[in-house]
Length: 341
Image (cartoon, rainbow, N blue to C red; front, side, top):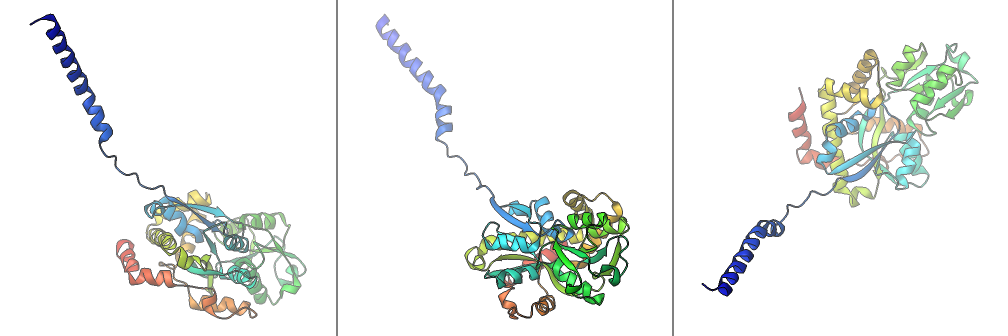
């Protein structure tokens, strides 16, 4: 073999060796990559106040149920149901945990909201007074704190005053936002009375405040906390809202049937430090929460009596079509079979 042919042979061999070395990289580059899952959709859920009524939503987030439905739910404290309902109507949040009273107020002002589910179908407020305020006579002429005008706390004041033989004209009613703010104002003596729900109600008792009227054991049918949406969204965003409801309902089933997990979530999200208050708060949740988030018709009718000038047509405020579809599809039965003890 001459030198010229030998060199050519070496060149060809070197090229083949280099190509062989490149082949794994080329093959790796050419092989199709698995499609990545789409990022969860950010979904803004407003709440009137951090309370045990929101436990279904907290549990859905904690258990990863929102993520399983392709949602990244951001739970936002709106400092009052009426304020949150207005934010919902304005399109700044996707759903709002709110009582029917607040929704009626917004719709009376030109809004078009509907409740598509219920987190509580009974009145959950206790009417507490500051130290030294022991009855109706002491309360007369004083200031009462509520979250926002037209909210469930506002309606609760009307009910409590009736039980005391007073009217709204006998007192001054002022907005104070969250239960925590109302509790602080009671403890300082800045206001004479305020309605509180759990866990603030347990904290009030622990601080020696007087429960002037306890509406809780009366079990008054009341659409106390619903899931509100814009009316048009029930058609336009039906799949999205259905996914949110499925996660919330399953979260509710877990919370109702697993007290250990439920109390862990309550401790974290409501910052409850007392074991006694935690137990009371959880038992209060169990007593008030409809498993499938189905609204109570008597609860709607009782609230409409407080708003005689508003439309008395239930369909102007409540739409159960999303829940009806889930029931027909067997979702409720599946949840009961999966979680019921």
